[in-house]
Image (cartoon, rainbow, N blue to C red; front, top):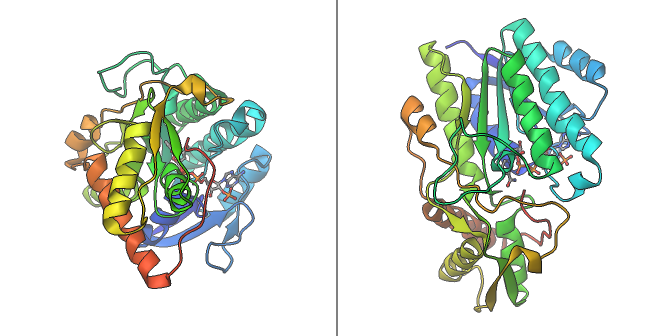
Length: 324
Ligand SMILES: NC(=O)c1ccc[n+]([C@@H]2O[C@H](COP(=O)([O-])OP(=O)(O)OC[C@H]3O[C@@H](n4cnc5c(N)ncnc54)[C@H](OP(=O)(O)O)[C@@H]3O)[C@@H](O)[C@H]2O)c1
C-alpha cells in the first residue's frame, strides 16, 4: 500500500486526538491545530479554519496531502447562536476549501458531521442517511452546509455523521458528569432528548478500519455514512449509566442524587433535536463492521479512565461545556 501524507486537523479536540496515533498506519501524519501547538508539547502545523478561504487553500496546497482528515469543527453549540458567522467559516467554508483541494489533486477527504442536522421531530425510528435534514440551530446549519459542499465538490469523500461524542479527554458530557459527581453535586439531567452516545474511540477505530479497507482494495465506497454506537439513551439515561459504571470502576466513591428534567427546565441558547438516534446499518453493511452498543463502549471508556486515574493518582479535571 502506498504511504500517504495525511493532514489531520483538530488534534487538540477529542476525536482528532484519538485519530492521531491511529492514522500513522497509513503514512506520515501532519497534525494541525489552530495555532500549531500540539497537545503534550511540541509544534505541529498552524492551520486556522476560520482564516480567509484563499489563505487556507494556499496553506493546504503547500502541504500537499494525499488524505485530509478533518476532525476540527466549531462545536460550541450554544455559542454558535451568538457567532453564527464564525461557525459558518469553520464548519461550512473551510470544508469546502478542503473539498476543492481534494477534487483538484485526487486526494481523499474524510470529514465528520453530526446528528444535529436533523430536526428530531419524530421518534422510534432512527435517522438514516437519506432522511430529510432540517437543523434547528446555527451549529447544525453550518455542519449541514459543510456536508453539502463536500458532496458537491469532492468525488473522493467520506462524511461520517456521528452523535453525542465523548471520550477520556476534552470537553464532553462524560467528563462533566464525573467531575460534578466527584464534587458530590446533585445532578439534574435532561430526559426528553434521546440520541446515540458514541465513544470517540469507536469513531476513530471505525475510521481507520474503513480507510484501510478502501485504500487496500482500491474499491470506492465513499459517501455519507452514519457512524454511532448502537442503542439509544436520553441524557438522563446516559448520565445514570455513567454514574453506575464509574461507581463500579471506583472513579467515584459515593452515589450522588440524579433527577430527570425536561429541556425547558434547562434553558439553553440553541434548540436541540428531541430525537437524534442514528441508524448506522449502512456503514455496517458496506464496510462489514460492527458498532458496539453505547453501554459497552461507555464501560470501555470508563475502564480506560480508571486506569489513567490509578496510574496518575489524579482526576482529569472538570469541564462545564455541554456536548454538541
Ligand atoms: N462532540 C460531539 O458530541 C459531536 C457530535 C456529533 C458530531 N461531532 C463532530 O465530530 C467532529 C469532532 O468533534 P469533537 O467532539 O472532537 O470536537 P472538539 O473536541 O470540540 O474539538 C474541536 C477541534 O476543532 C478545533 N477548531 C475549532 N475551531 C478551529 C479553527 N478555527 N481552526 C482550527 N481548529 C479549530 C479545536 O481546536 P481548539 O482546541 O484550538 O479549539 C479542536 O481541536 C466535529 O466535526 C463535530 O462536529 C461532534
